[in-house]
Image (tube, rainbow, N blue to C red; front, side, top):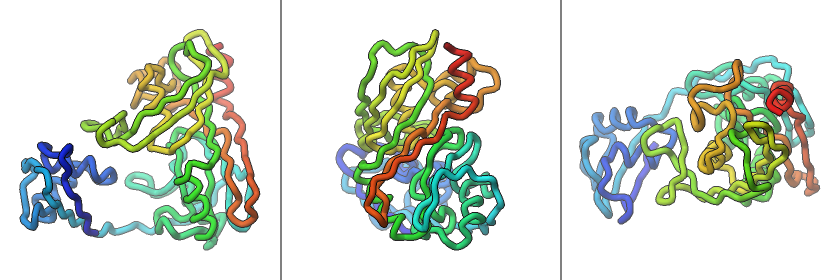
Length: 303
């Protein structure tokens, strides 16, 4: 797969391996360095080393070899289905489940379960690794996720996501006691310049991101909040709440490295409500996933 990039005036004076790792979020910097060594990165038609510093108006060509996709196997699973018809499927995803196969997770994902449940009735727009998947939530985030059974439904839901017209409300427990009852965080999010597993607030290269939050209950040292997404960037709620010094409880990536609650796996984040216009009927539908038991118990313990 060939990709091309044109270096703008605000993007120069950066090593090419770093520049490309920021532009190509799905490719690691170490892999980019291997491609540079193999001569599969050209600048103005000529191969360069990883130490090359990009200049304004450079034309960069990147050739990424096609990956060999493993066969994704259908697996019987006890899916918590909230709603199903001929076009869409709403699932209450449990904690610890990965949405779609990726390196290190080729079995036990939601896609494996969907393939068994739906057989061949899943949209194919996102390819063999993500059949039926229009959006995703993190492995340790629980709650409502929609899957599409055909390309018509997929295109409709994808358009609603792009237009920010879907209702997406999450519940979270954050560190500290919020003073204001509600607020809005409007800050662009992009790949972290150093730590590739992280996203960060990035006013130069980030994408528009808006999160509205309101306090549901103030606890002794924490706050139970609802977050409404206006956009849907990777780790958006986690990054935004950490940016105002209220990271999610259990989030070792954006909050304290050591979780203060013993046995907690990952961030306390639950996709509670998902609303959309049905692709076939044109009727607005809204689905709610109840708080998982671990979340409810935490609210009692931390009160």
